[in-house]
Image 1 (cartoon, rainbow, N blue to C red):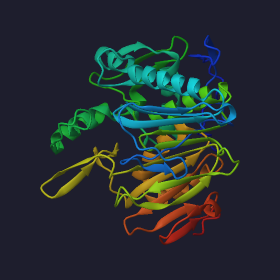
Image 2 (cartoon, rainbow, N blue to C red):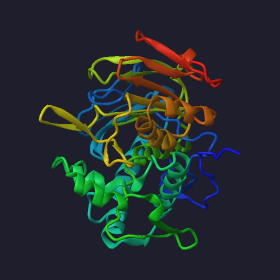
Image 3 (cartoon, rainbow, N blue to C red):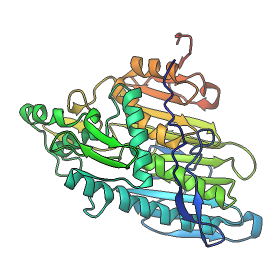
Amino acid sequence: MKKKIVAAFCLAMVMTVGGCSGAGTAAQPESSESQTQPASVSESSSSSDASEENSTQKSASSTASSDAADASSSRDIFAMDTYMTVTAYGPNAETAVDQAQQEIERLDALLSTGEETSEVAQINANGSGTLSEDTTYLLERSLDLYDSTNGVFDIAIYPIMDAWGFTTGNYTIPSDETIESLLPLTDANDILYDKDSASISFAKDGMKIDFGGIAKGYTSGRIADIYRECGVTSGLINLGGNVQVVGTKTDGSKWRVAVQSPEAEDDYLGILSTADRAVITSGGYERYFEQDGMKYHHIIDPSTGHPANNGLVSVTIVSADGTLADGLSTSLFIMGKDKAAEYWRAHSDEFDTILEDEDGVLHVTEGIADDFTSDHETNIIRKDGDT
């Protein structure tokens, strides 16, 4: 029996957020059926963009209209080292956006590896710790993805990322000896997790973890939960290119999400019509440095310790589960086209994907083929193995 990617949501986990009435209420994490269905906006460096309700990101500004059922609120936020825009429509739109910003800031403070007081930074510094509800959930999802992808998704990759300078911005090409010495510290199998006590430790000194590969997808799912609690049935969430759409547009039609081209910030690979889905794109163009005429991007293959080079330029994941979409966008990029297609066939009930190869050809899974339009050459990845 194939292993389901989506973790069982029977974790006795409740996250407290301020209810729309003002009092704190317990909100369950998104269910496996309705998980992560948020929004989109436009950003100069984002991977995706909702073409109808575009908002140019600044640093922290907001707009609101308050005409009863036509009310809307939109806010630009800088957090998690990226520009974000959250937009909601409906009578409680402004309250929903207020709470969305609070949740973004809370999770940023909790999960940041660069903030010494964060829970994750403390665990890394001490080599052990007790997990909160959020980090328990993220760890369990991360370990599930590690198993499902045969180690391609690996939150223990942090020491290698640090050696390349992607954690600090002090970029450098580590020596082969450095990489060889660090690779033994980057295996998530060596994360010791006690579910009963919600405790974590590491089997080897020097190990560290980073939830950056799924943090924004998880955050957008949490915002979607807040929106629904507030009665928002139409909304957009763009966390630095991690796009989720809540419901449909206010006129009942699907959102039109533009998938950015790696070649140009103002160009798009195509348009996806969708509702209640996360649309998350990863590629080497997002974060990289150049040295001696070579580009080195931030998506590290944990099997080699070097930037992945398996023939793909970008990967877009479309799923009801934002946490899953975030994790798989980098995982399938590392796998390359053939293994990514094989992985999708084994899990086609959980996500769809758009793969762009080095020749500019798009490979689109059949589950979204009818909803995706593009001027690029496009092949359809089918469940029966044909393309």
